[in-house]
Image (cartoon, rainbow, N blue to C red; front, side):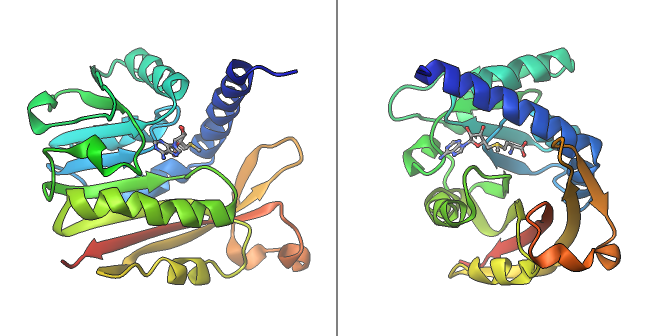
Length: 238
Ligand SMILES: C[S@@+](CC[C@H](N)C(=O)[O-])C[C@H]1O[C@@H](n2cnc3c(N)ncnc32)[C@H](O)[C@@H]1O
């Protein structure tokens, strides 16, 4: 029988491998290329192994806060970021987690342990952030969509008017536009120029390859080995 710890450790290891593959396939770089966050206050939802966190930090935001609810994920992100020579400011959180602007360090990545569906994790930074970034949310597609709705509880509160919510994920769908359509949250406008779709082939050994959408094989619709990577930017209008 697996202990909870064993399952969590496996999850951390699996994501560490998958995120390295996504990085090697150039997906993170493609996302970063169209995500200008220079000088901005940015919140990343779900640090994971920290690869995207590092790339966001290298874009020189004013403040970068990255939150994860899984302590092992957060520790793995912290050691990855420190190994990359990045300064990390770990914000100690109680219950419920609390982050205020006074705790933030502009020269470090501000890591927070907490659940991003809980608005109380961000007391003190209401309506102050320019960008909320969510990449590769956990779970199967329907859960991810449901969780996106709850993530917006937080996003609605922390984003300033005109701020951007940037969402990246992979779908077993040939029509990712329909997924984006499901995300037309009230009060947000889709920034079509920020929307881009990559097609990814998942090989049997789990490795990923970015492929030309025009070269999709005819069995694409039935074959779950093909993922569409969606990048969508939404602007908060209220
Ligand atoms: C699949 S990983 C993606 C990590 C990273 N964004 C990336 O692109 O590499 C998803 C991460 O989100 C975290 N997560 C999922 N739901 C969360 C929640 N409600 N609050 C905080 N973190 C969450 C998980 O612990 C995991 O580390």
